[in-house]
Image (cartoon, rainbow, N blue to C red):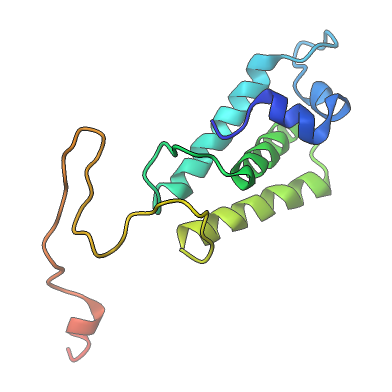
Length: 143
């Protein structure tokens, strides 16, 4: 995961997090609920980051921790009926950052696979390559 419950508490404080992650209403933080939300946020983030970086990341930049917390907190708030305009905006900003990372407009400062390499090994040491595209818009534009 890109963030922990402690990261969430450090960023927003107990007054914000506890009411959203207290599903059984016993005035205590349900850590499983908060961790599930962070895990869901990590999955969403991986769908964007996996287009540019080999996952799992060996190093987690602080920006990704912040984005993960913002996404998870919005989902917690939305589930609890307490999603505010501010939380929604933070969520949308996080998604925009992730889209920009996926499109290569923003770099995380991590090693990303280059386009020059025909393939890169996965965790099993296997390399996948494919032939050059036979049909493309440029190749078919005169038809």
